[in-house]
Image (cartoon, rainbow, N blue to C red):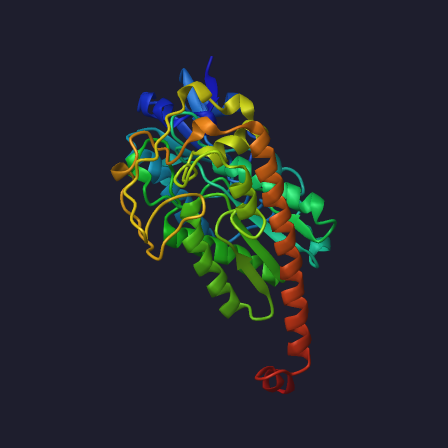
Length: 384
């Protein structure tokens, strides 16, 4: 009988140890019969299931043009092939091609036999649409590959609860951009341009449905510069909307003071798979954290204008190879993390996002008032 395992719960050394003939499957959505998938792959001893892609294709509730979605999915599959895996497949509902050729497996899917509700619901057009984007990437020897997705999903859900009807969230997207992908096994990569094209297409679709306020929230540092480009493009393309993003979470007016008040590590202890992310996972999913495997790494090449911590410092922006600074994939002191600090920092992150939601509402309201009043060049647009 075939054993299915969750790829996202592995650490990178466990991915590195997998036989390269192990079938790995990226599903579009959930609701497929495991026995049928195993049969389609010849009933191998084991199949690794990657995080399901929650939307993007026809029938998912939020579709974008197929060529745009297809490029993103193809890049993800290529990430696994670059790591040496020879049996990489994309599991799709029947009737969806994406130009993937033999790597595609099409099976009946629950969403194709029932009415799929639109994402988000049309009744939520007056809310800020939260778009949480995580990633599936290595987090040292002690944290699972889904660390970024788990954390940003919890922040988004908490924000919706605390914002009291002011926001709605999409399902957390489990894939982003990692330009350091070859350094350690297990990390995927949407590709920067495909990532930007995809999220701009998502905003295009939502604007066409009448939504006007968007907050793209990243749980992964590698996404951030690309999301800045997305909101810049969106602001040009859809001037009657307000799209925003921010550098990571727990990094602004509430998060930064909370970190300083409770951190046990010095600067450099929170770069990646360090004290903060480990603490949050200890609070949210302690069963996935392997504290006995933690390796603290804080011996980075730092200069006054370039160093790495959760809130990066210095005037220089750069992207040197991770291999220069880390032997295990960690940047920081995960051994100092506690679940209680994880709770405190998660609450600060949520409160910070709730404040941002209120500001997005205010920005859109005040700007629409000016537009309707004919402020500046808007007078020419309205009068014509």
